[in-house]
Length: 202
Image (cartoon, rainbow, N blue to C red; front, side, top):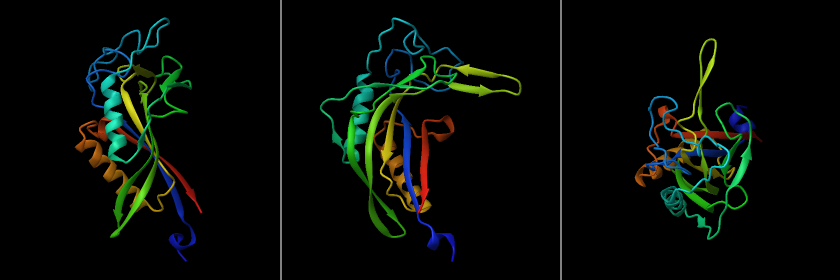
């Protein structure tokens, strides 16, 4: 008996996609990759006291596009929350994200795997800001805050993926849609498309 007949993997995926807006999600700093470290920052994305974030309209439009492309219900009312954690590259000590009332919910994505079509449920698609980047050297760690505040959508699947092949098919289809909508360049080498996998064995 091999593992495929003895065990069933149950997989849920959380995909972060950086949005191709001209500026960051809550400030006017440019949203580009590869600039010299710490040159694309301002008091807002560095979380200085007294600053006031202003939401990027284009980021909201891009998130809604992805929600419609995956058959989500688009919320008429949504709000942001503070997700507190302490990383050296998170200057505020919290990430502005959406929790209880996300922008898009209850969608689905059709995949084809081994000649069989099936739907994978999408729990939610919500907006949030990216953190900075820690650069680890041999004897020190440097921090680049250019990525702080870059707009992200997080696409959370239902735990309805039951094999590595289905996970591959789901991610491939998701990448195709993001590129077709021209809301993310999906350049994994530059970190604009990232995936966290939640895996259980049954």
